[in-house]
Length: 221
Image (cartoon, rainbow, N blue to C red; front, side, top):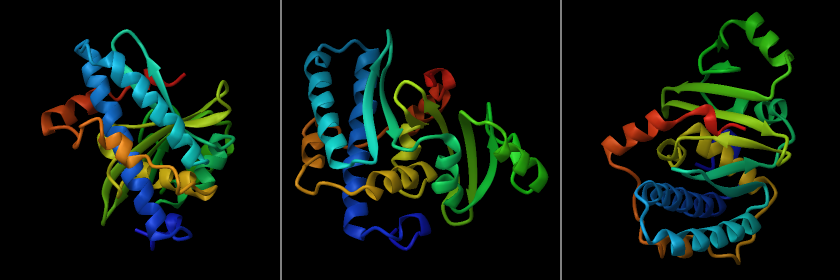
């Protein structure tokens, strides 16, 4: 992992620490969302515990921020990167992930990077949101979307929880880059606290397909 260009400046130990912490946070968030949809009674205890853990996570990793959002039928773990706009996000991180294939303003695969003129016009235009597709021989296909939040003054990653938990995915690498680029507080323990929720794995294949179906830009503000 450490040899990957976007993460090469960080130690393997730090990357692995982030992987354990971040993946477990995503697992717990996904399971709380499932409980939320089923109106489980345990939520009254689970959500405050998770929100406290999110505060600790944000203290440990200064370049990334995890926030929670609740609607009538969803519990969402929102992931913000401390980067000031979409163009900086793309140039600093997303464009450096191997296999960049296409970008879009309102959906995936609207502008193929092989069309140099169209791609250049896209990058020169005002951007508040971006959809990015990757196709890499080693890591396979991957997608990520992002939008700059005027409210938070940060860039929000719109993700699928199964994909972003995969260390080979573009989303994971981008999150790791921002989480580690401003340093981390190794004294703060996250993984153990997240593991204490008892959610040890992500979703079944059927549940994965359901998650992909629920991947919806309506969470973009």
